[in-house]
Length: 259
Image (cartoon, rainbow, N blue to C red; front, side, top):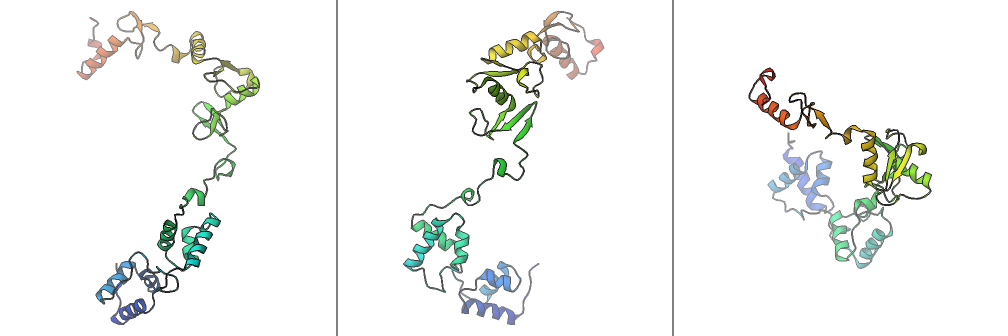
């Protein structure tokens, strides 16, 4: 809900805006505890000519522009320290940030990014640092951004670091770390074995009879009683597809007959 002012207060606002170039619409709005749109509407109704909409404090010391010495000093202050941002310099020289931004652009000074002003804290400097160890799925990862096998976040599998420490060298490209007892959380050196490639690693899992390696193992289908590759629910692909089709047609399983 917009606040309403008397004619006397509106005249004071218009007189204050016209008499003092440093009093912008936002300053007057803060002074009278109202919004920017309310003060602007009052000035327009009073037929007051508004100043530059981009900045009411466009110049230093009233309407006087920057001198050559002031421009050189502003550029030197900006390049001196990353903490001297455009906003800090605008407060120091009592002007709008757009004035500093335009000056740096004309002088060919590259603007700094927010990451340079407030650097992103990673590793031990992060606020939620918990020792550099995290768990992803059934693996333990350790923060080591300088490692050649580190991911985009800078984490490496703990098993890789343990195997490299045991071997006394870094793993070559394509080498895979295998857990002997099948527990991928057990990264003791005596539980790790390094294979030269993925093929040799999968061959060991196949011989050990891991479930994920025997999904296509032949079984006796529970419906057709034939020895066929497993598809789903102890059925071959043909019987499973027929069963799903009859379910869609609302046919009861006891009426299903193998053809």
